[in-house]
Image (cartoon, rainbow, N blue to C red; front, top):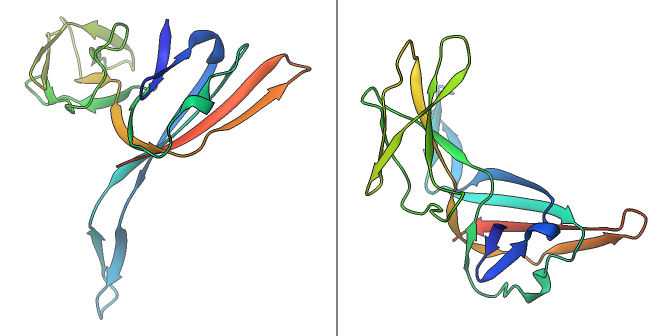
Length: 173
C-alpha cells in the first residue's frame, strides 16, 4: 500500500509507518491603516505550504527526488469543506482519486457525533445523500493533490530505535 506520493516517487508503507502532515497558508497579505487607525485587510495571493514528516523501518528513498522541478504532492492529511443547505460543495479539481483516497461525506449530528452519508460527485460538485434524523449540516472530506516546489529533504537514522526519520517541506507553485 502506498500512502504518500511525491512526483513519481511512491514512499513505501514501511518507510512511513509514522506520518504527520501540516498545512499552512502563505501569501502576500498585510493590514493597512487609515488615518483614523481603522484596519483594511489587503491580500494579493494565497498558496499552501505543507510539511510532511514520517518515520519507519526502511529508508524513504527521498534522495531520488528532483527538487529542481515542480511536482505533484499526493497529500495524506484530508481537508474538509462545509456543504451548503442543498448538501453540495465544490471540491478542488486537484484532489486525490486513487484507491483509499476518494472523497467522502458525513452528517453532523446535534450531539457532536457524525454519521456517514453517501456521496455523488459530478465533475467537481459533491452532493451528499440525506441522512435520516436530525442533522446540523454536512461536510465532505478529500485529500489534496498539490503542485509544489519541494525543498531538499531532511533525513536521519536512529540505531537505538532501528528507525529512519524524514521531513519534507513543499510550497504550492
